[in-house]
Length: 284
View 1 (cartoon, rainbow, N blue to C red):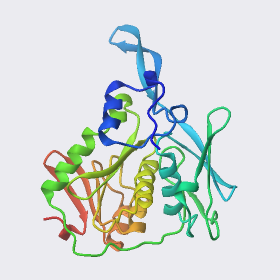
View 2: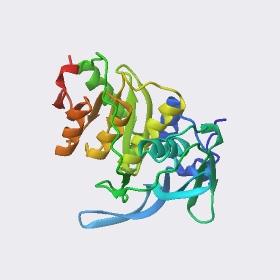
View 3: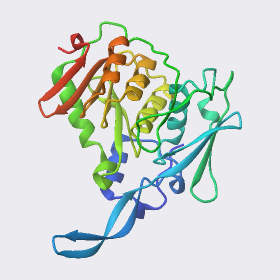
């Protein structure tokens, strides 16, 4: 069931319209405040004034599998179920059968949100690695790549058009200037989009959504706002996503992984221009 926000004072009107346009499923308002109003002092030259500003919300999510705590992460409290499923599968923490409808989300005292997911099979929590990501990025060192296959190709015009729409839809970023974005597109339309204080989290959310909705990845592109690090490319490589696009540049290791996983890596999308760092044959 989709519930509307019960209190609109936290949400800018343009962001409400943005969500309504996308028909994004919402959680209960009290655990899904993407931004809040705060009084700040704005300084312009030699003058200053007190004004209201919008600030992105950061919440701690404690993730458990079969009632056993795995770890805690910080994120923007939207698309929580999608985030947890995407994170656990992307990191190889769960590999067995799970039921998305059985995921329980509970707001604890203070600012914590606890999430539990029942799953079959072993729960792997060894091999934790701190990454270069913001918000104390964590990944699990299990490099299981699924090389992108098929003869799918994408047009340069399609990439530019989709990335322009991607930027236009970044409502929370426009409201706060404080979050990253990620989206999955079929080359003609954006299928799902998320925004989060962490760029890894945003990718986990859209992948989790696609897994829940049984969306195939083999002919899709991933659009991201942040840098193309090895961890971001690895998330796409795990699912055989053939095209990864960003407005910024990749790291050297990210390019190596993209080459091995047969991923077309595109960066510096600005206006009519972009750079192709690997597997350019997919772009026509």
